[in-house]
Image (cartoon, rainbow, N blue to C red):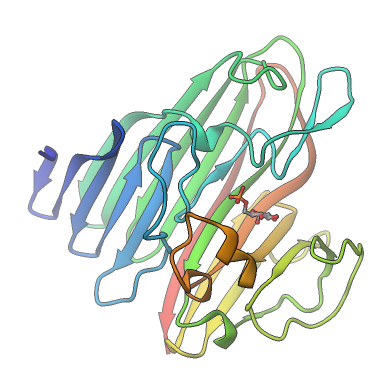
Length: 299
Ligand SMILES: O=P(O)(O)OC[C@H]1O[C@H](O)[C@H](O)[C@@H](O)[C@@H]1O
């Protein structure tokens, strides 16, 4: 049975079971509705009023301890990809995208007001990975209004500096990946993880995969991109802060080998990740914040 957490004239929030003991929140508000998993601290869905959904969630996603949820906005931290920098400076390969997306987060606060729904989650830990044993706190503030905003603050609670990489790994819903493109991406240099070639500069034809690119922002450059969805006649504008890269990913035919993507699911999304894929150093007791704001414009 879902448990009602808060209800007022503007909307309601309830807590429910996703499966395998994993808890999630569901909100309904005049301006839209959404779900957020406390496992992984992961936004799963958001649908502004009278709009198509903005975040894609696989119908075949696993909801199990120790598994990442396929869709929404996984938090990749303290490493993006499969490389971890150990305390002695050496770099090793391990499982993808760090432990934050497979940890139990805490619900710290929630409000429902005329302007929207606000939710704060946190994850505090130490020794959560043998490769990354440091003490830390993550705090995530989510605001669902006409726009969606997400701030992630990262605090190093260990006595030494730590190195991390990270990404807000957003899965955006589109009419079809082949009818989707970007404004303001083609002038950026990218590393192509599909071909292994670095420092590439070639135009993107559409978002049908396999595509796996790390685009590097230039200094002082605008930090916003627009997903242009020709089929659904809409644009999704994403503005990130304190993120030096954009990661663009769509698995294309490789999705057929992925058990947690439903049939043809790869045509329904494009991942655009606000990321820092190069090592970031955080001094003891220091905090750093990354964020993104997402707005939908129907054409
Ligand atoms: O399957 P996952 O571990 O969730 O990773 C999914 C994808 O995430 C990122 O976008 C990476 O650039 C890809 O190389 C990776 O395949």
